[in-house]
Figure 1 (tube, rainbow, N blue to C red):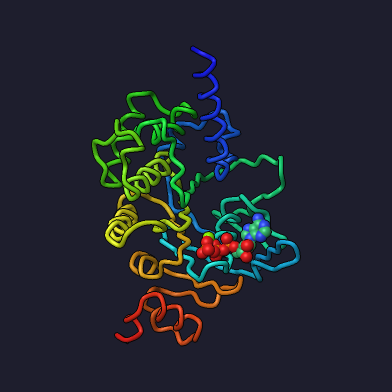
Figure 2: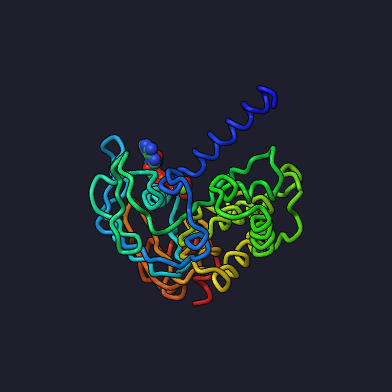
Length: 290
Ligand SMILES: Nc1ncnc2c1ncn2[C@@H]1O[C@H](COP(=O)(O)OP(=O)(O)OP(=O)(O)O)[C@@H](O)[C@H]1O
Ligand SMILES: [Mg+2]
């Protein structure tokens, strides 16, 4: 193997580690058993009085929320209201100033260097998809399984095929990433997250940069997963139509606070003037129908 290949390989592993920071406690384990891998379950989250400031500026102001096992739960709100910051706390990428987060009834441990046994898996679908352009679709999806050495190669290929089918991209294993459209990249990124059989999946702005038709397709993909995979889905988005279409419940954030939580119907009927204004300006017509 040439130095160049080794370097490229090291770069990939290092990028992969950064990418998988959200399941860093998985990556410090040397292996995961096949039995553990093959069982996934939707798990619940409780956020209690979460506060976070940056440079003295409060960004999360006493956030409390409960997300039920198996729910598709969306956090919506205008730009800069703290949605991504909240999501990054759930993925342990940020530590709160105060408050707590319980996942699967256990307090998240934010202390650096403290390795706790984690009984659940979670993954994050990044806004940019963050795929390796030098790998094929199938290689991207199989990366984590091959790194963790969870399954034999034949079984990994089956997982790749199954996950591609779940996102409507059956048979595209050997396609180069560069040949994919934006919507296909997003679906491959979802398939890659699903390859670890997560109990929890986080999406940050999944519809950013997608056209309305592709957004519609993506909504259908995420919705279909609900019936086929046991997992809890958390979506952060300012795409209100998308969130209302596929969520079981929606929370609206404004200025670092949760100002409304409810089913899509309850949100549409909200009397809160900020929610009404957000509904009116982003969905035009929803207000008119009520
Ligand atoms: N690491 C950081 N350091 C300092 N300020 C930060 C940091 N991360 C986020 N912020 C600030 O926190 C606020 C909320 O940011 P956040 O990214 O959560 O917004 P958002 O609701 O996700 O917006 P958008 O819809 O545009 O993605 C912003 O004012 C942002 O500048
Ligand atoms: Mg954001």
